[in-house]
Length: 369
Image (cartoon, rainbow, N blue to C red; front, side):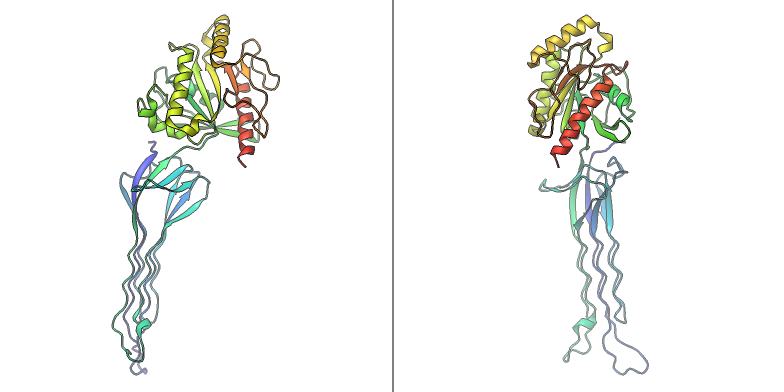
């Protein structure tokens, strides 16, 4: 089961109590105090692990506790400290204070560890309270209490490219074609109920991560459809691939305007993202009709069809692609980087699509350093 948001109560360990004890050796007369200190309570840590991809291993309103420190012992022996509790979360998890809504930690890198709350200190044993006027202290300190916090864990997937489109537009088919992801695919809307990540390989040593989220409909930013529940999973992506269905009953202009509006209303940051447009199901529309549809679509978004030798899309179909981006992002980011008709079923323009997206990903990686 895919779970991307949970609420937890976490408690660090209580410090152990100090010991009240006196020396009792056979040949030691009037032995003094020798009570040891209590052990420190266990800490709460968070650790990011690439082998975890969901928050489903947490139960609803789960209470996670670190171990308490052990009580001190005689002969000035300190009690054992409580073991720390390490909470494993997948990359992209935000730890949020449930009361204030403040983001406490953003777990992004594999192996990243963060100390959240420390355990209580152990109490001092009675040996610390001896003096010339109090040679027989009969008391010791109790251990300090641990701290309890209520937090929320929110998972936002980390990907280079996020797929955005209406339900049943071909997003799952595309990600299953170009990557190692294997989502459920069927000919009805909202087949995809959970987000999916896939690694897209470019040659032997280069790759990027693509994210597929459930279909977007009008009003998604208000929670309609699966809406806001999964829109946040593309917040971390720097590149959006809008997928527009050539064979849909929805007008092409309506599709792209609705998708861009919903993304912008959900997040101002996402509205500034670089983007490209894939016109899907080119295999079930006649070439002449595709020419008319694509040319009309390009006029709607204010660009002209052109040819590019750098990313060789099918020359028989009109498309638009900007000149190759460089380290200065020297191209018009208010326009799509490319517009191209594709067919995942027949692999039409799929390889050029992968390389064009990878070109943008590389630029973002260089620019973000």
